[in-house]
Image (cartoon, rainbow, N blue to C red; front, side, top):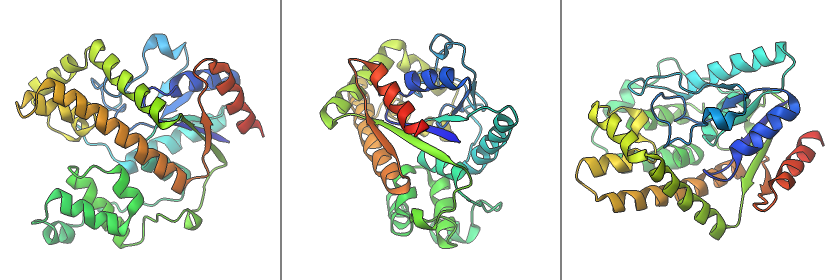
Length: 294
């Protein structure tokens, strides 16, 4: 069986995953589309050596920030890891919140090697990013909720797949390839938003601005820095926004992402939601174990 842990930033995914990895004597696979990139550490909430407690983590720091990464590449890599885990009699634990990445692994998703449809590129060349995003929303709501409107390449790919019925937002039509359980960590909205805002403040204190400045100074403008925490500070360095406004936008976008993730995992999976016990996290761990072993 595969264990999947999802939830917004700062909710306790790392803490729970480490506890479960120790309990099942296994390793962890990242399910985050940003953590694959080297140098994007603070903004992606990448686990530190101290936090890992000696547990091996996979699919972290495998790409340069100038390189492109895709759902298809992630799917191939994770399925290979799952096969390796199976040979070692280990239980894979996938931790993250990139919904389409996780779904592509667990279900029978096929990707067109041609990637982008040149006909569609020509058809939509005069469409603004927002208008293009609305086209995808009409075809595939699930994908539109997790693909940013400024990521034009992925929008075209998703529209192409939706147009050939390669992506479905109806989970009843999906064929699961593995036995899995998804555990979602959550909290009431007010507390959750406070957690997210505090987490962003901690990232700033840890040096997020300097981290982004190093990427900015290298002239990196690839897909990697379109992630939340990076794209907003790029606008600050481009002198479009003040630093205070950029930080507020990071918090806002992080809250919006949490809502989208909740909607996606609610609609696409039979997610087992756990309300995190902030006063005694052991209760959260015990509840997760009950779900897994039931």
